[in-house]
Length: 161
Image (cartoon, rainbow, N blue to C red; front, side, top):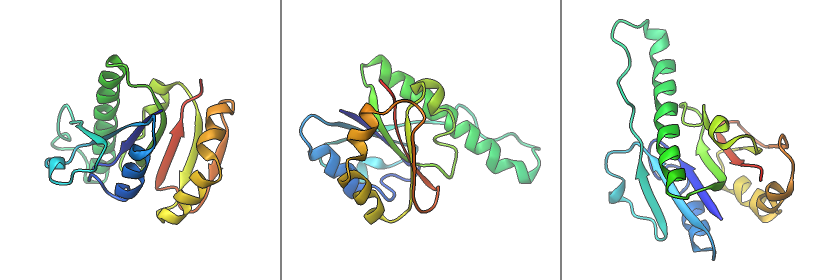
């Protein structure tokens, strides 16, 4: 199964989860980040790729809108990088990422729907969801199912298909 992790500050909260999924037979795990030095933190079995903003935030924009524009630019960078990965044959069945900074804004358009889970920041909650068959459930469930737990800061999405 192709698995995509997204975090601007790789590896963020996901080093154990990404490495654990990479150890499972049949999984290909790619971690997208815009961190400048991801090679400084290798995770066994995890392929790290970078995404970039095509430009910085606009000068003269109202200060209250600066973070929103940055989030949109980051989301665009992720979607361009994911389109490149798809052209290489990578088809993520599960996407796990930090959703508080725009990285997940446009994924649904490219991945065309799927099963969503909003995960809390504690790894225990993530482990519970995976141990209770969440991945299998998302493989077989129709578009639109949702599982929510804890905060909405982390997001996992398994496309339908």
